Image: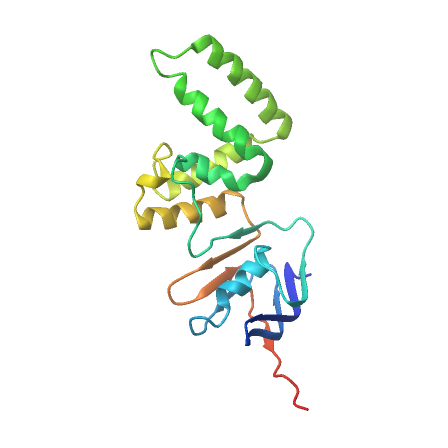
Length: 205
């Protein structure tokens, strides 16, 4: 069974057809590279597959429960967030709890902190995290941050361009995706495939 599939896909910008009855499929264990000129629709296709974009016509099917990690060309990070908060921001409902748990943990280490109030808040957060089964999410976030040699406490706004690119990859990998889509300088890549791509020419009248 494929991980995801695109069928008879149409997408155009103005009068320019980027996808014209295009078919595409990704099977488990495959890797795909999409190569083409600038403006030919590579990034648009990856965004559509990840659910961040829409077709004009056609069908996108994703395996139920499929986790997709998508790294946009220009990741829209909040510069006020810490690296840890930015990484867990992609984890859905538990992201707020994880970010607050991380913040409270560090505030408790401060000598002038209100330890009693912080401890009460920490116990509440821990209970909520346990109820959500989210401890593995925290461990995964810390692992990818270390893997990309990032400072968990650094503010996103202070990072260099290269560090922000590593942060974007860390955020995508932290959700343990079944499929990872990311743009590179020479190609657009999707990991999860044997290449199976067909673009039909329009039928002449």
